[in-house]
Length: 308
Image (cartoon, rainbow, N blue to C red):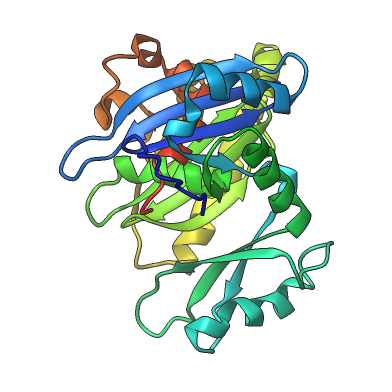
């Protein structure tokens, strides 16, 4: 936790998320009984280095006034789904380290490990998501923010950021599939009652769809739909007590076309995710487009984090 030093932070969270050659900022306030309010949503190109960009943003955007959250890059961590260890809560992380030794290609003895429960019903074996990242990665990120005097209070992963957005769209007692496509990544999550049950990286991203000609794009969407259908079928077998009601899509390239292509090949309803239905961003008119929402999805999701 960042030393407060008497500073009174603004309400909510400010996410500071690197995405390729830019840094995305999002400030979101979540008040009880109200829609989340997106107060800031901006992108800034990294001209020389991330350190230089953070230094400039720290000054120009007054970041030291906010509780800030960052996301790890795809290559900075591993996410594994494992059986929950039958040990006391205080011993879970250590028990999982032993299992993670066979999952990751870096030392886990001093790695950062976080655990998220996957709720279950009946007599099913309890499972957890284990996130593991090299100590050096976490240390370097913390040191970078500390050097620039930016209060980094949380480091999360993209899967949880997408989860945070997806749960806003959930229908009561129904599961929700959420497909996020942007330049450099594709990510499918399934949530239920506010919890993440499935996360899967998808090979197709929006950049590949944008570069393909019409016929190639159609083929890519057909294969994507097949991959999604197989995942949904497997999920249904694994979690029969969860009924997935629909698949929402966020894409920063031709979201409507992507939805139309998937509708033809999936059995469940497919719709474009529109943050206007679940959040207030009246002060940011550029967020009215589906593409801009998708570009900012990880930053918004990181700023929607739960708790303190």
